[in-house]
Image (cartoon, rainbow, N blue to C red; front, side, top):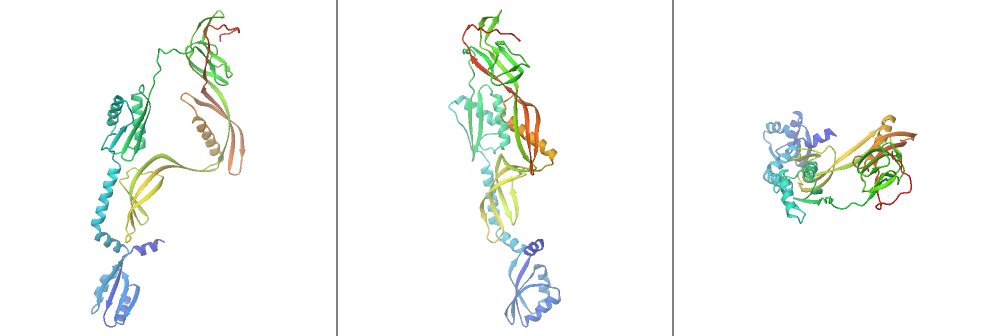
Amino acid sequence: MKNYIFYLLESKLSLNIKGNNVERFIKRLKSNNIEILNIKYISKNEINIKVYKKDYDKIIKLKTIYEINTLDYYGLIKYKNNILNNKFVILSILFALIGLYILSNMIFYVDVVTNDSKMEATLINDLKEYGIDKYKFKKSYEKLQEIKKEILSKHKNELEWLEIENIGTKYIIRYEPRILNNENEETPLRNIIASRDAVITDMKISSGQIIKGVNSYVKKGDIIVSGYIYLNNSVKDTVSSKGSVYGETWYNVTITYPYKYYEKTRTGNEKNVFVIKFLNKEIELFNFNKYETKDEKNNTLLKNNLLPIKFIYQKQYETNIIDENNTEEQLIEKAIEYAKNKMEENLNDNEYVSDYKVLNKIKNNDSITLNIFFNVVLDITEYQEIEEYVEIEEQINNP
């Protein structure tokens, strides 16, 4: 295959030869180790031949009385001549593509979607500090996420969430204002009860009478912190219980994981790139941070029927590829990690998987099935409204 490609690319010439007894001239060429790739007889005294360009000077020295004219070029020399003949067109296209690339990666509008002129001005000033402004280059997806987090942190009392969306040459900024609870707003009188069966692991209580302490086992609906304040087994006051209670609960998970595992997912990062494609080689213009793996969507802007060259507008989507061929030990470890990660996706802040145990293992031909018992610490806080000074008949034992 390589030899064939070299043959196609190697420079060759098509020559017209005129003179008496051109057959004798052909014999002279062959005797001087000049390879004749093709020969076509026009008449007794005229032929067309194809030879390697490297032999051209030898042929000229041997021509003596013969008239030799070049008809056509083949291989790299043809491409070179075509490029030289069209160099101004090609340069114009390159400069146009460079200009198009610059313009398509520049921001011309920053639009904050809001009716609050004060917040609009605040956000525009903050965005300018991070280089998000008119006539600035677009930021990467990762950089936008970083900027978003920093602005949210700076205005944590004013903003609930913030989104910076890039559409063409425009940034659209959307946000949700944070509504702070009125400190003077009256909170209903209530107990804190267990939202599920669990063993209490941590409590952060600011008001109310604690009924169940850390390490206590509670069932769903049990009162953990009472809004009734007791003294000598009788109600002396009623408050709104406030705080958070965390408890360890349990899940039984079954997962099947294959020995051979392949997964290709998009990371969410994407960009537009101009590409010059020559034969099977792609040259990406001004792409200094290339994706290791990617999906592509090509749009051909220009191609030349004479040259194997194309100018392509390419949409690139960064991908993440997992290609595994696991041993049994690796398989069990990865299956546990996979199940744990899937469980943690549904957990909130301060919630976590505290422990696990493999209960059962079944070996299949191409996979392993595990039955895993997970200990998970969750926020088990739930509120139950109560009435003021309701007399409770049951005896309450403080822990």
